[in-house]
Length: 206
Ligand code: SAM
Image (cartoon, rainbow, N blue to C red; front, side, top):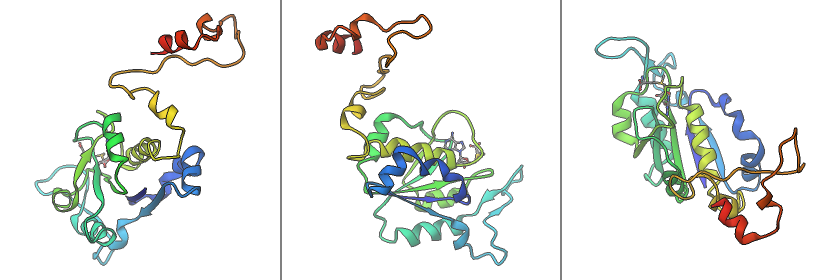
């Protein structure tokens, strides 16, 4: 599965260079490319932002570099194109599972006040929020989305882990987990986990 992440700040993506996601990349189960859409601007000063029509604070990312960038990396419109924005439906595990079925995702990270709506209208299929709060840019949301989706790509982690974790059934949270030692600072482990009765353990965990 391929992710193309459109960002002005590719250096922010260190979190995808470690642990399970790094192993998945090394094993070629997922591919992640960072594309700086500033490289597509036609502005002679390489600007990609401007003040908002109608006035107001901050800067808005202009449509031209974003639209040209998306069209250059997906000329036949084969990819699912996503814009990360707080002004959208909040991501759920069910949506993550659906998105993991796509071969190619393009993730657009906004910054400053956001993105000229015409870029969204022209080249985005879906807008996703990662929660009802506002972050500085779309980079952390894009990392969260890639990480959540990668877990559902075959072979990245054990199917058993994905099938039994929180939200694998809607609204379900996973049971508490315990490992050695059997007693820690006076706290034990639930007896049921120690008796080897797998049917009872399964019931307790459900
Ligand atoms: N002015 C925008 C608003 O009020 O909706 C917020 C812009 S925010 C400071 C800059 C960028 O960060 C957004 O364009 C988006 O890409 C990203 N972002 C911030 N919070 C987000 C969230 N909760 N989910 C997804 N993306 C978010």
